Image (cartoon, rainbow, N blue to C red; front, side, top):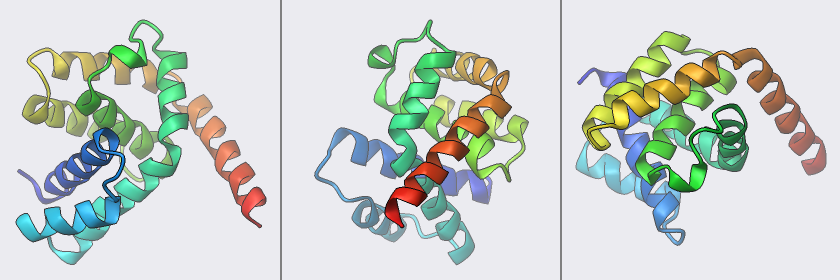
Length: 153
């Protein structure tokens, strides 16, 4: 597995655990994962960037998935697949330093490793639908972040 792929896998594990076990703090879970599978500092930082980029926007990302891919109801999406989708959507619509094709390919690879047999095709299909609305999604998220920043000031 490529180094950044390993960082994404760690991020996925942390997001999945904190998603299904609400009392698990992401920083603690990340620390535990990094003790089990050490990463170079820059990769640990990338994993952390994903985790703490996705978490505050998880509801917004879920709403966007539901809005632009309504044929896949969120309550019927497995938690692991939901978090893979969140990571990829965050990478190409918020972080925007990962090329769209790379974000999708990485998500499909995570789905192959951690999801069901049908997960890779499902993740690819949902992300294919979402990428058609990439710029619109980016604007929605950007507006949301700006709004939240103003509220915090």
